[in-house]
Image 1 (cartoon, helix red, strand yellow):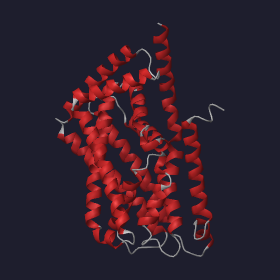
Image 2 (cartoon, one colour; image 1 turned 90 degrees about the horizontal axis):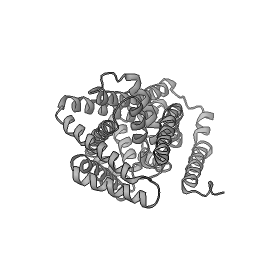
Image 3 (cartoon, one colour; image 1 turned 135 degrees about the vertical axis):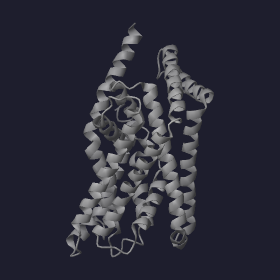
Image 4 (tube, helix red, strand yellow; image 1 turned 180 degrees about the vertical axis):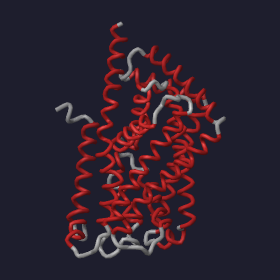
Length: 353
């Protein structure tokens, strides 16, 4: 009973229940996917295949960005290693609140590939910074391009408020990471405070040894940070790859749009609306932003998916963009199991010593 009453367990059950409920609703409700499949509406399956390929290309670019960052100093780092790291990270991002589990697990895996923890943390943080900057610029451009569309939406005040909150959240996260990356004194104080707090509530033992190890990794982290900003070519390459990554991810919605027989809207319009959906759902701190993502999709794409196809489009998009990603990347989660078990064994060994 104690296991079932743990907050983590309750959250997992609640999220799974929410996901199942949403799937059933979008499939069986009126004008849901079941009705679409029963109807005589012609479906262009080649566009569905294009949507799947686009999602695969997104994963390929994710792997490429990791490869560019790590290969810079670790010449033996292979592209297949980057693929493993990317897919494992995508899985843990998908199943943890606010995608917080991806990077720590990637650090574990990279460490097993003989990449120093501080270096791996630094490069993944820099990757995240590039990701945030590119995403922010895309969102700003999307708002400017589609401003008439935003102002014409029925709930324009609510839409503007949600977009504003999304921008504030996104910029806040970016600023926090910038502080952590460039302010060595402040980042040390924050990490030491959190470490000592975890020790007081008995999550961390041997706090002095932990602090010594953390300080060493932080020093390496900041050293790597200083070095990479002297490499504009690497950052430019990472920025271009990240932009292509977003294009591939946002094009999934456009291909679904074409698969359902529509062609009036341009790829830029559809991609801009997808950027809004991602911006809004990013504020929801539950795994996969379940519920918020579907709600955002139906809110922004209601003017594009007509004739009772909106629910079907939302479910197909969610399946490709989230559920299929979890299914494909789940086997790679086991790559982190041995690392976490090894870390626990090492900690127990130190305690006994």
